[in-house]
Image 1 (tube, rainbow over the protein chains, first blue to last red):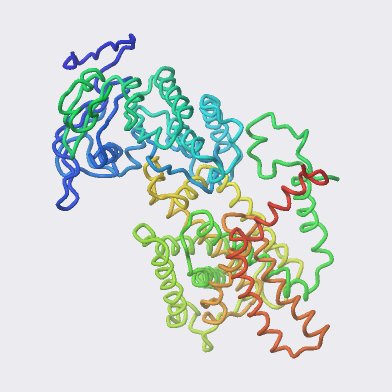
Image 2: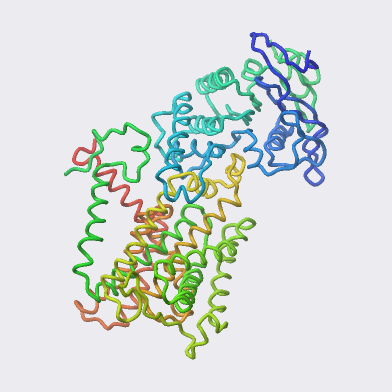
Length: 272
Length: 358
């Protein structure tokens, strides 16, 4: 069913579109270490795509390749139907790919509001002279983007901390602010690197709900790395499984769950 | 009467993002402006201008400039003295080459030239950070001072190697040279300081400021979410050097009048401005004012207390000043790394609740 260029319909009836991003035969080496070995997969419009695998499998490296932080030695990255030339991470961000980080990478010295506003850089058109003058264009732009940011703040329920410096926030809220910053960019593709790492069950439930809502309300395509198998299997439409830099499985959660190679390498057998 | 924000509701995003969101702060700001522009020029005399007000105004501009670079963008610079020298010599060359042009234009152009030089010396920041960048800017400091010492064109081949500010005016009012009235020089510097502070504030609360702070707090993450590091760092160097250049031009033309580059713009000047920024508060415009005021006032106060009141010898008081400044810097770094501005912020938070802190 995945050869169909028009996409497919998920079990819960959501329509998945064509291919947004395609990785073709990606190989990434650091000196003698091969982090990613000849991996190909695609991400389709509107789907939630999970990348799983044991520690050191190369999942985060894969995300870093997508966001342009690493340049693979071999292979091609196709985004929206055209091959992506090697580009700097900020250019990738300008193309509409936003991400969160495994270890929270917020700007600690800034308030929540400023952090989220920074996510809207792609929409800022005024030059430095207009900003120095402030009145007029710069102010109008600030207000316009503030409105968009407030919608996201409202959506993620962080209104009460908007003026708080990020450094003062607890871990769970920081994760949420980071998601807000990524969402502020109105990304075409949202990359989440372990969005639920270190959270308790309630926080995980909240975050899962936000991820589903983002996908549902904004139609955002999401690629995520996660270790909590319950979450991954519930949330994602298709799953890529990596081990030692190789792809060992790719398909719907059910297909992956029953794949013997994946069970051996990562999932294990339940003892019940 | 009381410092309160209760009942001061914001109904638009414009209101919410203004510089002084609390009414009391806003009125205090207007009062300070009114006193500075409306009252002080009428009561100022030469002693007040030269001992306190002019150095405070000029150092505040330099501190705002350096604060943008160090406090907001996180790029350490030890080249402030060198960049002030660029501003001073640019201003000198412009003043002697175009005697009929207004001093306003000269000072602004001097700032612009310094901005270009600052960008050139800021280019290494794209590759190196922290201590290594500090050393690179230190090289700028020594190179620039050497350049102005050794190339006679810069000091118009004068025999002494000094530069002397000729008499120049703005709209017929003499601003530079020995005959400039105190109130005119004061107002001239005050206008530049006010404009600098407003511009710095506008930049730091908007998009540009956020890209600077993003680079400061986590440069890799900043780049991944779309900050162009080249643009952010270079613009910080340009804006910072622009203000520092203006400060240098005013320091030479309006305040000192005659300058020998190694003495006026040596490495001590770089450190002095850096201390102002650290003591005042990194990443705070108010901190730049506070730091400049503190380090300008301290020697005057010490002299007042030590020499005039207690009758100590002048040299001991002068040395004591070095000791106190050094101790203060260590104290601030340990106890309050965010400087006077943070103390002020804490005081305001306390005041907001006073007299019912719970």
